[in-house]
Image (cartoon, rainbow, N blue to C red; front, side, top):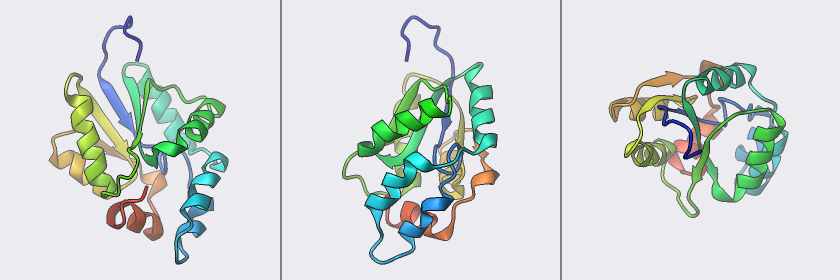
Length: 164
């Protein structure tokens, strides 16, 4: 984040299911064992969710946008390239720490706490109802992205297996 720019409230936005449509790569999670390498390698080909891109652009007008994703840190270069390709303006990209296998809701609420330590978190946008519920319970204003409702295979991976 630019230290010379006035500090604005944070808008925290998820990537998968909000900005990026992951539908084409869910088949990697529907097999046993799950093909995590293939799932994440395919992320560069995600089509954008126009509603999510429009919302992120709107939020960027008066917030600093933090992208908070369950994607593991090793996906950073591909994720940043996708954001640049699709013109997503953001101030900070926060990814799942290496080796972290906790449920997405638990991970994200913990990371929200770190973000909120010195900044107002004005809104949290996610497609995962479990993340929205946990963030709301923790006192954050939330907005569910209904255009990206997660498939059961992705919900299982995020909330039970703690993988994305």
